[in-house]
Image 1: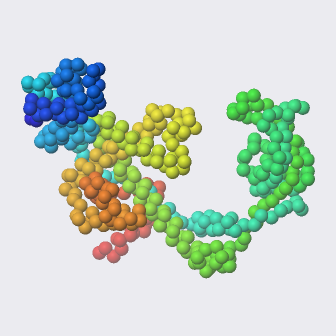
Image 2: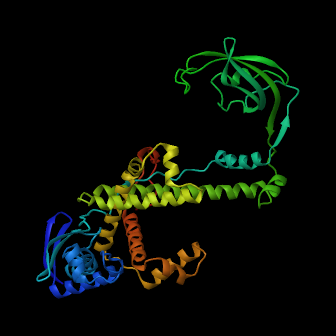
Image 3: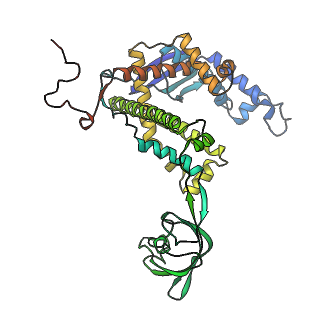
Length: 449
């Protein structure tokens, strides 16, 4: 094989023209004949005993050319790509220019290459950052209420009428005038008053009734009701209230905390909740700050990017979703049936995300290159150990399944993220700043003389 020429024909596209000499091509044709020989059938000859000359006379001189060329093209293109130093992002498309036994083969490979990204001003970017949420007693009380609800007891009511928040059990039947309508009947139906489960106004009319009461509930179906035959119609539901219950929440005391948590006192539990909520608030603030930084990086990527890179990212996202579905006993085909989508419309839901992720990756790889970011053996081993621990396997097993080159590049990209983040300037919104009071020296200026 020889590389005849290499020409950049378009942005991110290079055309390689290559030749395969006659001798190499002849050997490949012979190998292809031998591979197909056992399956060649010509009337009057036993299967597997047809000579190459007869086969070519019967089926044409080029009967084995396609297989021969296919066996040569892949390795030849790989060699040419190494020689030219091209960084491909997709499989090249191949076109044969000429082919004959005397002169061999000339073909061209149209190569889509990784785009060259220009990126600057990635250090010192001014990025909005929200302040860390202050944790209040009300926030802690919300978490404690979860414990209370888990330990609540259900109390039956027989000495008062139903009120909002109660859980009731009712029988009901709906009528348009004197005629019952389909789907309007239920027996022993549980309903939490105030949940909004029924048509507006229904639940409010149960309030004030006692167990054993029979009563009418008058409602009007909404104009945009999903069953168009019912939309806008007045209806009467004849109801029977069979049961009223409510949740009785326990008092928060040391005894409940001991029974329901790993703490001994309410004070200890509240302190732990505060610590965890504060840590969570800090993580949320940092995560939002990092997302804003990365969005700014994406905006800086303005170079033309081959569409195949976006399609490949969509492929990966769709495959991940498919795997999640399979873990739940579904697959994409069934998902399409449920949602009324097809493959194209489903892929389109990932397109915007794919474009952003490809641009971000290219930006970070360029920053890693500009900053000469390298991954030490110690950093690589530490990363592999963390992956192994997360998957409950040993490091050697991880090494067999993870392409080390790709993983190393992932680590370089992550270091690029950290570099950009460390150099970003957080801009706190004006309304969140606390200005010094008039006549009060700003912090750090006291005793300046």
